[in-house]
Image (cartoon, rainbow, N blue to C red; front, side, top):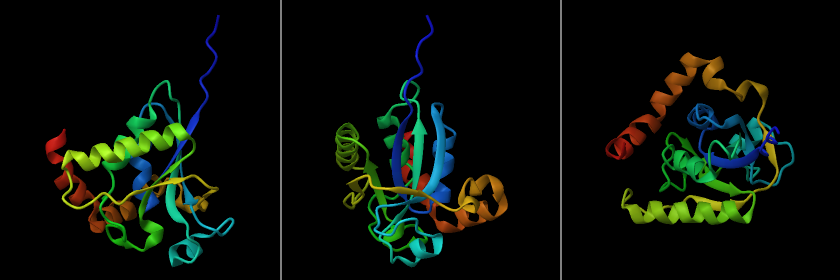
Amino acid sequence: MDKEPQTIKKAIFAGGCFWCMEPPFEKLPGVVSVVSGYTGGTVKNPSYEQVTSGITGHLEAVEISYDPEQISYPELLEVFWRNIDPTDDGGQFIDRGSQYRSAIFYLDEEQRRQAEQSREELARSGKFKRPIVTEILPASAFYPAEAYHQDYYKENPLRYRFYRSGSGRDLFLEKTWKDSE
């Protein structure tokens, strides 16, 4: 008898520029798709221009579809923490403003519990001298970003690498996590 396919689950993370949040998740076994978009605000179907202006309340985020038989939500959380600065409440790296702050948007109570537990473990780890300020919020409508933002790192590799290296993200992540491998 064939095994029934496992239901695909979703996770939503905001970690600053959504272009930089796609690659770490897309390479993981069990991740089906990663979509860049906007969530957490009050405007329906916002545009990139509206979100980046800071007037909508939305954050740039990624919606990850994953197979929980291949990868767990706690494993996704670990990848999330290793790709952001969880102590910065003013944005992420070169991108400043509330639309670029970090957040975990939970879709159910189990995700909320696991997100809070992972944030507490990170805080206790001593990895950061400043407090962890990444918010854990209930998920609201997720709006996919315009097509030209999807897989930006694949479609525009030179521009992406230039942006990524100039943003300060890679330097921060390398310095922060170099002794944790």
